Image (cartoon, rainbow, N blue to C red; front, top):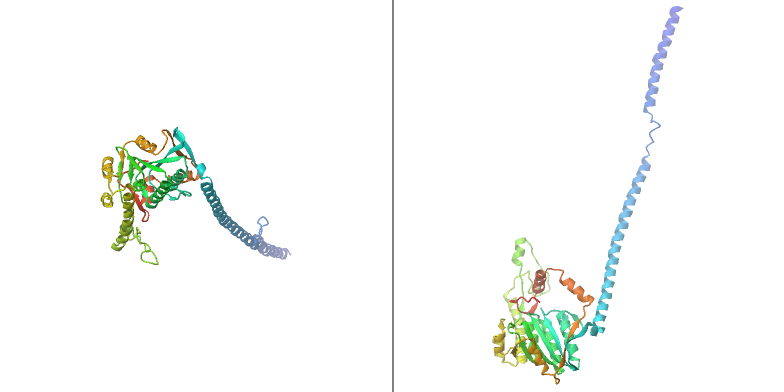
Length: 386
């Protein structure tokens, strides 16, 4: 009994510890493999939806930003165009309808206001475009003043005070044309040369009734010049090739990106000779000189005041008072009123002055003088400080 009981007890004990022990371990393993309640379940579907939402948000943001940028650029460009048109119309209206208000008269010497002498300066390089009605630069300013004097019955004489190395061919020719119109209105013209009256400056002065030059003045430089810059050698060194596509062979004649052929040079020589002969004719007619004599003087040099007087290019050596005395001779009163036009600075003038000063003077001058094939009546050997 005791052994049986002991055996049974042992078996049950073994069964209890053996089987039940293994079962306990299996249950423990099952408990270990099961996810813990503290860790949230992973939901891949929800994560994918979140990524898609972020991507859509990024795409929407970029699209909105692109629309905003392009829309802003369009509105700015449209607004700039509208502002530009309004500004152009306003400037045009101001120039045409309010031209009389742009110049005030400044009395220099009081006198009889029924007969007057006006002093009109022509200083610095002659440039610009337009005519007496509309334009910019020296062309518009001087032409409009000459036109105003021509239509003023009280003005009997004009003193054109020139201190200029010349300038653009067409610019000089337009002012010359306005001076001839003034003379047809029976107005007398006296030119006073201060420091320099060269090239285009003398082109304007030639039809004057009387020319006075200061003792230290320089007069002359009769000729036409065209600046041509060639950069082919420089481009070859840096490996740049310019290959224009053109409809005709002469379309890029005078381009700085090609060598000037003999045929091209002959073409430009013909143009310059034509304008040079016109210059000689203007001096011959205006100064009433022999054409051959003028042609011999038209070699590009400037002359001293004493030489200019000997050649008949001027009438007197003196100062401003001498030109004033001569102008008074064209009046029938002893004390005519002497005045000048004072230019009223406008917004357009300020903007033009600002744009001109945006580049260094040396670079600005180089670009103006050497861009393309600009034909000029200008003296290059003298630096005018005005």
